[in-house]
Amino acid sequence: MSGTPRVVVVTRPTDYEALLARHGTRDQARFFLSRRDQSIDEVEARHRRFEAALTRVSQAIPVRWRRTRLRRGELSRFVFEPDDVVVVLGQDGLVPNVAKYLDGQLVVGLNPDPALYDGLLVRHGVEALADLLADAAAARAPVEERTMVEARLDDGQRLLALNEVFVGHRSHQSARYRLRLGKNEERQSSSGLIVATGTGATGWARSVSRDRRGEVKLPAPVEPALSFFVREAFPSVATGTSLTEGRLDGEARLALVSEMNEDGVVFGDGIEEDRLAFGWGVRAEVGVAREVLRLVA
Image (tube, rainbow, N blue to C red; front, side):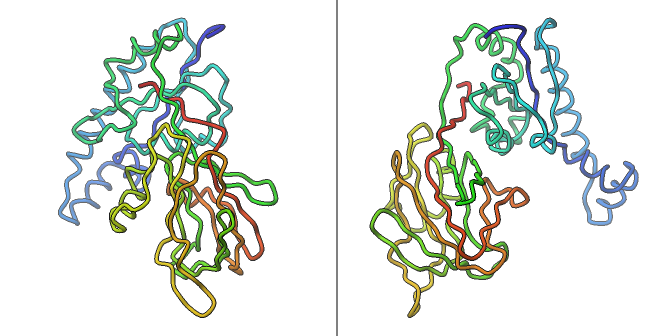
């Protein structure tokens, strides 16, 4: 790592901060919760624990290092430097939110509240940060290179995700499209489809796979492979249900052509606001991305 390192600490608003933003004052937030037989005390206690963890993170960063704090909502406007060390402080889901904006930067996931978050991606305690930063600076940190998935439209627009990409209709209406994998092609009407990485195989894809008795092997997080599942494909005189799950290994691509007049979408990791329009005639290909998430293990 050349030059003076920079640490980018990424957080999202706590539940307490979100309540204050919505209601203006603590008393108003307390009144809102009390009318619903809820207490603000636990929400505030979690906020204090998070603030204490954030203070410890700041203290662990070497004084001579550069630093900046970034809120989740600012990610799309921020320019990361190649040698940044990105410290994600929060729940596991914050790591995928960050991953799509990176290109090889190291990510350290910190769990501010192990009693609240599982720690699948934010696997380190705050107390470990000083040693982890030292290891990162010396290029001796153990790193997992987790596979990511990309969706690319025929006009050049591109979307990255760490867990999965969803292709379908914005609402609960049927999604209509043509689907092709290799030499197999089918017109379908369904609730949309997901293409998941090994990281995403612990979430949405796992639930779908379990319902189907696991006939498609889910990839490992570092394996350059994906699994796809069509949700609730509907058989009719014009649509089929034979191409509803499978694996995409290496350079394999799943090709789709939209047959939705409006509200067809492609989005990643459950973030519907950050989506690509997938209207009639638009072509998309989904497969393994060249980028990986470099997560400090």
